[in-house]
Amino acid sequence: MCRILGVSRAQYYRYRSPKPSKRRAEDADLKQRILRIFTEFKQRYGVMKIHHELNLELQPLQLRCSPRRISRLMKELDIHSVTVNKWKAASASKTKVEQHPNLLKQDFSTTGLNQKWTADMTYIQTKRNGWCYLSTIMDLHSRRIIGYSFSKKMDTDLVLKTLESAVKNRTITGDLIIHTDLGAQYTSDDYNQRLTELHIRHSYSRKGCPYDNAPMESFHASLKKECVYPVPVFEDYETAAAVLFVYVHAFYNRKRIHSSLGYQPPLQVEIATLTSQMAA
Image (tube, rainbow, N blue to C red; front, side):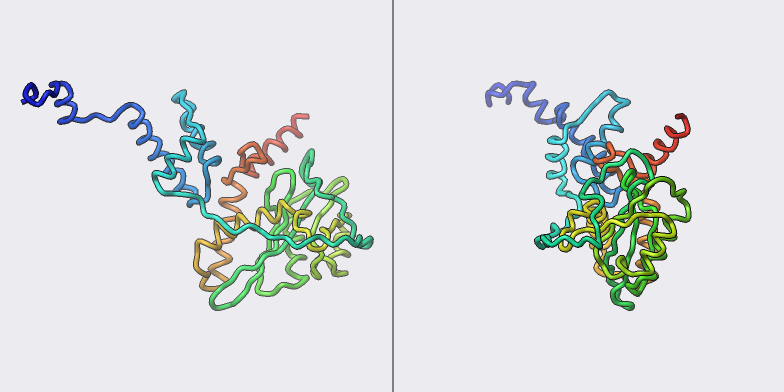
C-alpha cells in the first residue's frame, strides 16, 4: 500500500505512532510549570515574575526559559495576570505650600530600614457595611507593610492606630521621615503632635500629584487588582478584614516578589538587611 501510494514506510509508521518533537515536549512541561506557578500565586503574576519563579525551578536542571517563550506559552494557555485601570492623575498644583513641606521630593531610595516611611488610605466596599477604609504604612527600604489598620470610619483615629502599629515593633532611631498626602487625617493636629512626640519628620505630597507617593500608590493598585477586584464585593467588614490580613501578612510581605527588590519579597530583604547590620 505504501509503495502504491508513494509513501515511505517510515513516514507511515510515524503517522501511526506520532511522537512529539523535543521542543513540543519541553513546551508541554513548561506549560504545566507555568500553570502551577500562576495558580499558586492566585493569578497575580505576569510574565516577568513567572519568568523569575520558573527559572529558579529550572536552575537545578541547568535549564532556562526566556520571557518571550513564557509569554507565548501563556497566550496558548489563555492566561494572564489580573489587571487594573491605570491611575489618571490630575495636574499638580504649582503653588508651594510651605507649611506642608515635601521632604522626599520623589526620592524613594534608602540605605537601611526606618529611614523613610510612606502612608496612605484606600477604600474597600462591602455589601452590609458599605465603604470601609484601609490605612497602611510602608518602609521604603524593604517595601514591607509595617503597619495597617482597617475601619468602618475614615477619621484621624484610623491613621493614628496605623502609626502605633508601625512603631510598636520598630526601633526608631536617626532622622526618620514619614510621607503622606494632604488628607485631613494626616494634616490634623493630633496626628502631627504624635509625630513630634516620636521625633518623626512629616513630608507631604503636592496637591493632585500621586507620583509623590508612588510606592504606596503602587501597593494599593496591587492590592486592588490582586485581592479586591477578583471578588465581586465583600459580604461584610469582617470578611474583608480577614482577606486583607491574609493578603498583607501571608502573601505581600512574605511571598510576593518585587522587581525593584531584585525579585525578592519584602521580609527577605529585611532579614538580609538586619543580618548585614549585625555582621557589621
